[in-house]
Image 1 (tube, one colour):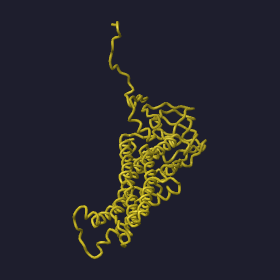
Image 2 (cartoon, rainbow, N blue to C red):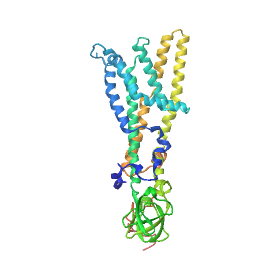
Image 3 (cartoon, rainbow, N blue to C red):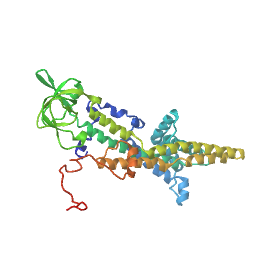
Image 4 (cartoon, rainbow, N blue to C red):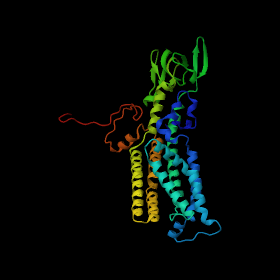
Length: 391
């Protein structure tokens, strides 16, 4: 992986047959999102949250200070809190709508519940219709959740460097043999049955079968073995491998999505889209907490309604719904994803399944078949033991 990182900036789309990358199911939740978008949303929301918190009446009371007062200063939390909601919070509300349409409330629904209830209560309190004013809760909740999604998006994008590196293993063009002529064509124009020329040191443009020539082919990208493999007429070659010591004429058998390299890329992409047990647990916890919060809020309101105190019933019900939104849960899981993905990528590890990565902590023995890669490939005497009764 280390030797391929300089290709990470290359767009995957320039290589034929890899358009599947943007359509993996696990990435749909991030459709239309980008690291830059969440980064900008976080920093602007964070900048606006500071004055919201500073001029918040509750925070001033808790910390024992008085914020500077001037005409309109009391509206700072309301105005800036609303801006934070409209700028940073709508992405969660749209996500919640999608979850509700699918009848699968989860983290987005729980976050949106806390955002909307705290916003509604604070807006009503600003106009003197309610007693609970928690603009600081609206702003900080949105900012913290945006931070979590920024970290998660950054981890996903960094992991895509592995896909870009794999895509970069394919040449942009191929030398196609058309009768007595050799034409340089984009690999996207190759079809099964075409005859291509692979010169010494060049990469094989598509999966195929050697028709003529002999060469030592480096297949380490597939097998991990550094020792080249001799190829002659009738031998199979794989797209992206490197021919050395001779030239080959190859009859193309597979192009685009049908190549072995594309299959590897699909595995890597699916691995990045796969959820971990922690993610699944967090989603289930969020769904459960959503229902619990609704039930607790409704029970609280009904109790105080029957007790004859409707005003306090609304206040307490809103308080329950606001408290139910977990700031830490929305931030912890993206942090786990970001750290595990980054550490794996730095150490050249491509994780096929996050659940397998989590189970790896229980491994006692690992058996490798990587002679010449993890080992030198040259047997040596490491020790001698005398058998009982032997000399």
